[in-house]
Figure 1: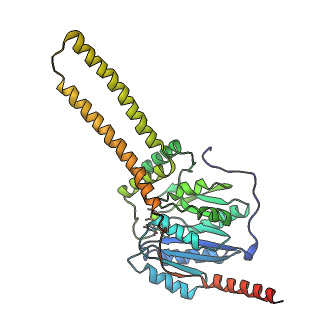
Figure 2: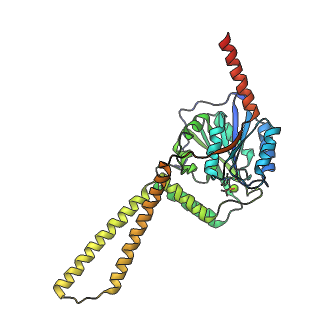
Figure 3: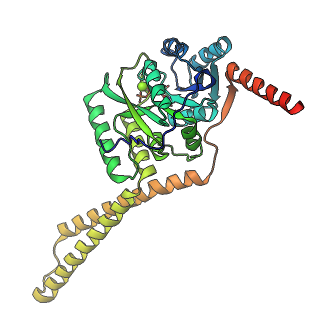
Amino acid sequence: MSTVQNEQHNRTPHGGGEHSLISVVVPCYNEQEVLPEFYRRLSTVLDDLNYSSEIVFVNDGSKDDTLEAMFRWNEADPRVAVIDLSRNFGKEIAMSAGLDHAKGDAVIVIDADLQDPPEVIPKLIEQWEEGYDNVYAKRTVREGETILKKTTASWFYRLIQHVSHVRIPEDTGDFRLLSRLAVDSLIKLREQHRFMKGLFSWIGYPSKAVTYRRDPRGAGESKWNYWKLWNFAIEGITSFSIVPLKIATYVGLTTAVIAFIYGFKVIYKTLVYGDPVAGFPTLMVVILFLGGVQLMSLGIIGEYLGRMFDETKRRPLYLVNRYSPARMCTEKQDERSGTMLAENVT
Ligand code: UDP
Ligand code: MG
């Protein structure tokens, strides 16, 4: 398949047993219903790994008891870190906050709603050990989703493949593993309009797909509706392509040429046949058509201009209300700086 970049070269194996740390980033927005079950399943998976691990819960301004649960686990489990954002920033930014704070040598991003089964994590890690930096989970089955959602999703992927240079693999969500190298590269991209699927592909590096069955949501409800999905699609296209601007140019150009030819015909008819004033319907049609094309083009330009406006403000991506790192990591760090101190003394 041409869209999937399985590069075979330039790979150096990762890993290193328990010295390596695996971070799991979980963006959460009103997930109190599934979170306990998610935490239980994730913990079971992490317990069986040969690596030490860290769970970075990001609370994206939840209005229910999600945060309380997170802090409870933060107290009880030295692996759990909690980032409480100051309000709801949306999944893309919540994910970025998690990536910024994750300390692992490999970082996994996973949804809290159990649609991405935590049991796939060992398979992602296997590929990372093989030396892949960007291991993404590819869905084979999408359960619990309507035909309409599936079709529109597939159209969207085809469209974005055509209009942008970045190859975004189809049927791939945000569920993936990134090596430290990939994470460090990704967190350098600070744009406000974050189409993460595109950014994940943009950074490149040896990438590999791991297939899995996407389950229906464990509990609670999806935060997506068709209006949000539509905006998400616009975000994806405008962040990674200027083709719509080109289309506006060419539609404008074509109408101008047609108008010119038509104008010529009108003048010719008037001069040669002395046509009396007529053609109100044609006039209306032309005015309305041109008006429509102009407004549409302005709208397209506006989309890009608005994005430029947002970027020029250079605001931080998110604000953190409270950050409580995983105790295990701070202990490890203390240990490390302790030995460094000792080395400096001697
Ligand atoms: N999410 C978030 N902030 C938001 C919306 C969603 O952090 O504003 C999280 C949500 O808690 C879940 C993940 O993003 O862990 C995916 O959300 P959802 O299941 O609603 O999306 P879908 O699976 O339908 O694409
Ligand atoms: Mg979901």
